[in-house]
Image (tube, rainbow, N blue to C red; front, side):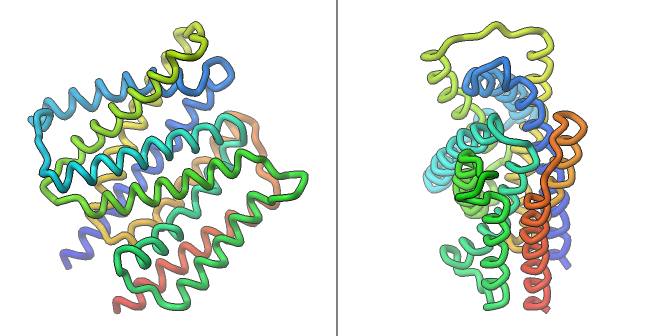
Length: 290
């Protein structure tokens, strides 16, 4: 009963995380034509880090000192977050929101496979087959070697690898390590690195409207950070991961109504395959447990 409750909590936090991340992506993409990538990430990072710092202070967790083992995990998790941020936002600045998000939906399959290979989670042949078919769906979305191929799709695929590493590391954190502390450390690291790179580039003027979008992105990324860490620590990876697919509906709607981006039939077909295989792996996990 307790496991079921933890899994349901994890699922709810995962859906909240996905809503936060896709709304953050939308806000960042809205400023992509006027600001350089690292300037936008830095300004968002300043706001997000201040908000996280205030939240951590209000909960008495600002001065938390993790154990050496957890600090090492947080360090590597931060490295994975930095990589995921750079590759995914680079892709997002240069391709439709729905396409970039659809590629990222291979993540539950990648996490399930990685959990099997590196954490010893048992995965049967049916789920291995589903993972393989799901990656075929990713190839349909990316379409390498065709006229519809966008080289920045490869950046989105690289982001999948980094987020997989991040989620596996989150699962290894001690239960006593506060999620807010982990999110604050991560946000501060992304802010510092993007600020250092932005300092070497041309600094563009920032309008009040851009600041509004960046402030919104900071709030939504805060929700995404905290909810993602909490989700992976409450529930089992194989149960929680498929609930990432809720983001695809948001991405499709926002892509159409905010950016006027109509996904083509290949993107929809590939997305359907990826989502279908992800749901099947979820189903097989439940059957195996029963």
